[in-house]
Amino acid sequence: MEEGLGSHSSIANWVLGQRVSLLSIGAEFVDDDWRSERQSVCDSCEYKAKVRPDGILPEVDGCGKCKCPFDPKVGILSHYRRSGQEDDKLTKTEMAQIVAMRKFFPSLFVRSYIRCPHEDGNKWEAIDKKHKKLKK
Image (cartoon, rainbow, N blue to C red; front, top):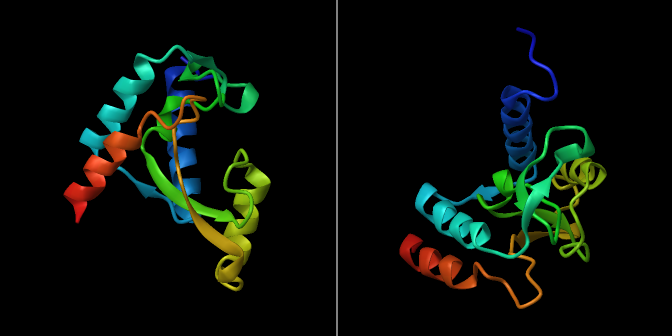
């Protein structure tokens, strides 16, 4: 059977590609326990929804507020961003700029920590603080 855009394999390949792309912009990932705790917050959130990665892949569980799929978002601690764009949605164009320019112009980039976008505040904050203390 041929695997198309509607297959489970296409989503898995997309997630893997996203993780590789994120590594190229200096991503730091959380461990499995940390990720699981963040995921449980998202699973019980009123904004949990089906989102469509890249607009063409099948719908997957994600955040209805920011439209990001839970995988890989809940597993990312931080990555580099252009200074002043930390709160904007990360685009493929910006990712390419980070890869091309960060080595030569490091002062243009800052480490951006991934947060839950809930309007009541970052719902992952206590989890992140707990795990950061454990890491030290």
